[in-house]
Image 1: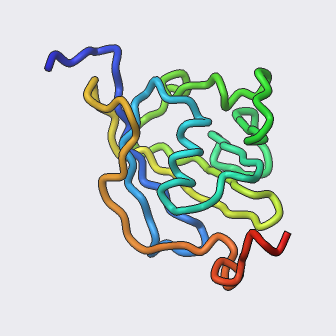
Image 2: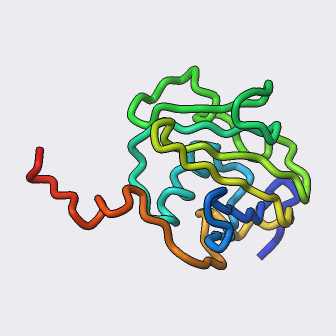
Image 3: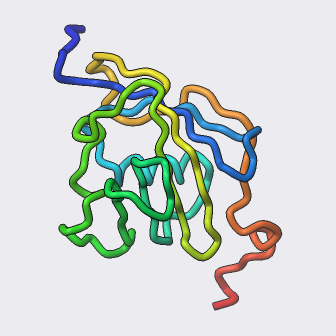
Length: 149
């Protein structure tokens, strides 16, 4: 397979701030959007994608100029996470940025850029290493029943 200098793959370590024994190592193509990254992070930890989220590239949850957010069920073309790709962010090895999911329950994740490689073999994101699990709704996960609505 011929490798393209235009195709980058980012290896990211995703760690929830409340439990640093849990992590996911993700490889994702640079042409993927922040929306795709958010969806894959949530899928990799078995969370429902049913809340707003925010990425902050300034390593600061509550401020900064490089913030990208989205309400998942509202495909608003003005939302930067829908059209911003990882390549457009000019990420650097060792860079840290934040993912804040569910502004009520406040799930905070730190993302570290572990590697950046030229590689066109990753069309879809993959988890290459993981440790531990999280429970999105705590004890309610076991008790939750769709018939309750």
